[in-house]
Length: 58
Image 1 (cartoon, one colour):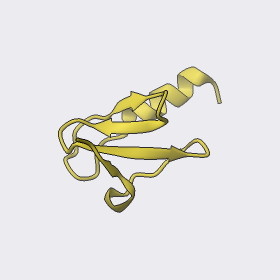
Image 2: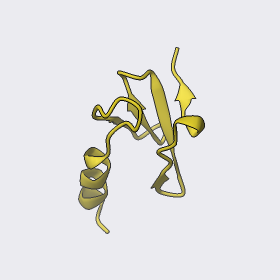
Image 3: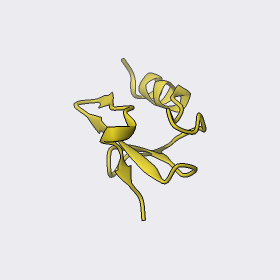
Image 4: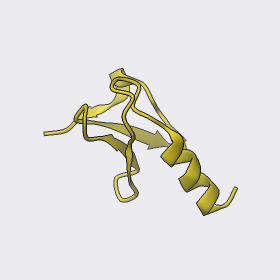
């Protein structure tokens, strides 16, 4: 899968809590929900879209 295809897949994901779009943080390897103040980890290239696994943002 190409980088562009991966980016399109990530852009299609939404926050499971707020159903809002997510922002991809390549440096932290996280998908950030600004509405929910949560960051969902990407582990081994797979987004972990579980609220219990998300990091709370300050």
